[in-house]
Amino acid sequence: MQELDLNKAIELGSPYPYTLVVTLGENGRPNAMGLSWWTFTSLQPPMIAISVGHERYTHDCLERGKEFVLCFPSEEQSGQAWLCGLKSGRKVDKFAEAGLHPVPSTVVKPPLIEGSTVAYECRVVGKLECSDHTMYNGEVVGIHGDPERAGHLFTIHYSKLLGVDYRGNVKLNLP
Image (cartoon, rainbow, N blue to C red):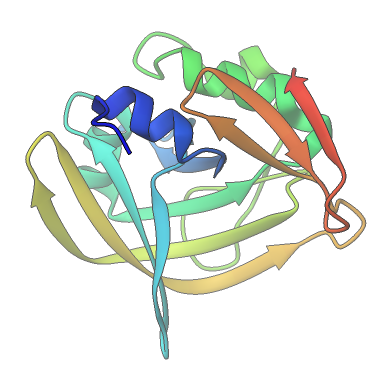
């Protein structure tokens, strides 16, 4: 084995599931950010942690609102989901620009994204400062999904997307 730089190691460790974390801005406008740094942290009660860079608009939204929805965009939403990882919600309304359709959540204020494969409503119950990121631990308070949308998106170090369905069929280089 050889020594690697961090970027090469992350690329070789890919793919990572690509999600959209939905928060609300101070004006109440929903924002969706592309995110691969998430994990389950507990099953009883169910909890999910997400890691967000300090300079990100989503970080500001989480500090204010303390709630998020973690949506797994369907394969059909690859172009829309990719746009959410390229632009800042400080400057654009990503829901409008990407053509995403918000659906009211049942418990938290940020909306679900219509067409997602799975969506987890979460309330932040703790956070951990991790140098240039904050890891937010959210208790899952609502779960929604569409079993007809079986394809998930994965990223290779935020350079490209690929789709994988539950049967293991792979589509490369989306969108």
